[in-house]
Image 1 (cartoon, helix red, strand yellow):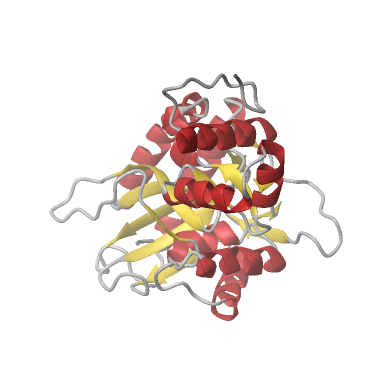
Image 2 (image 1 turned 120 degrees about the vertical axis):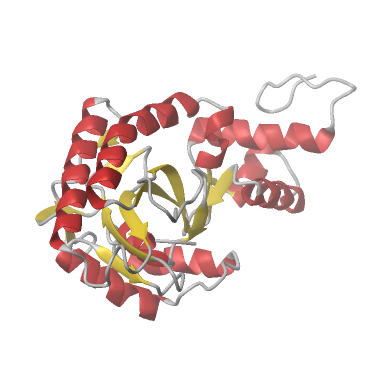
Length: 289
């Protein structure tokens, strides 16, 4: 006997696990669906569907966007078809991040937005007496740190409000309200970078710039961070220059490898506004640092 997706069921199957697999398979094929649409499509009770979605979202296998639709998450990448794409991106980031860490004598990392969170996918340390480190896969609320502001700078103000609503609904620790986040985002759009001078962590300073295209279907950012004596609150010009050089190199590498989509060239009136990055205008696309 098979279910609505044609998956064969057997007497030894675990029913709830079978239903969860059906949810993942349907989302993988459709891209995104609401809980109501999933329940109707699969013939599941709404309460069962919500429990499955909540469990998979807690495990970072799914994410819920600001419109209430569910998507397969980067957290599932290493277990499925996204793994080669993630590995390709990480491989292309290696040398530019190493050069960035060497030039700035700081820790360098690359981060992607996943729903209402940021997730670090790669980093490189510059050898020094006290290391300031995070593991790849570390994540945090999108409203926290310079990295969150840089990622949000590529979204419209109305989209940001929706993203922050999702963040609050998820119970994110120390989530900031839109009234506090949007002014920081606008400043980032104006000068092309965001700074966190010990606001998120009392001993860490960080500066982030957004990438100019979409990576794995989402927005990305580059960050360098370190101790206050290594990275002053007033960011040195050579650090900004190194970030911009790394941004340009990563954009070239990922675009050439087919892992980055170019930024939008046009925007519907009132929908998207230009953001500035690395001193050049671009079109906006849909812990620490």
